Image 1 (cartoon, rainbow, N blue to C red):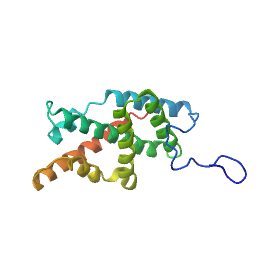
Image 2: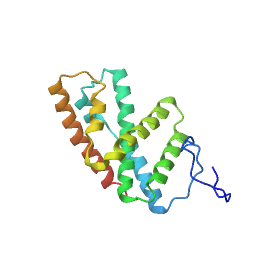
Image 3: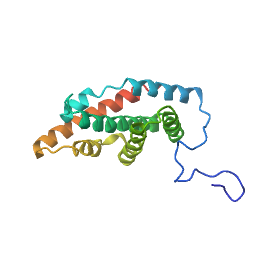
Image 4: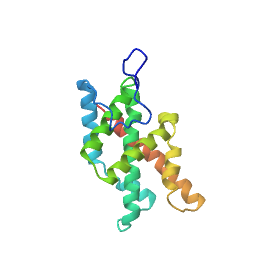
Length: 172
């Protein structure tokens, strides 16, 4: 998209971050991006899976929930970026998504990227003040009694906050 004077305008809503042209990041921004990539690669979702009641032998459910949790992890990082890099958070997140897509071309990774954007859509309006919508969404994949769902939701809300703090503390 171009402005009337011929200068480039904002990327179209239909243009995916994977197709956008690479931007130049400052050293600090690159360091934060590299730090998150390392955190993301080392992420272990054992606790979250246990809260959700997903056992080691539940292969299909485990794969689905790992996809969800990886997407959530990306969205939590984007939320942390908004606090530390308010001007550059979108650029950094889009750069990460583009680089991740370039390195991971399989279908599961594409779904993780989609889920990351969707979780960011859930988190963006509330910020870091309330993670209950995300926790409810995660527990919606399972049928539980009302009391059981409330207990799991509360545990997940607290744990998601802990994950967010972990990511935020290791941003740079």
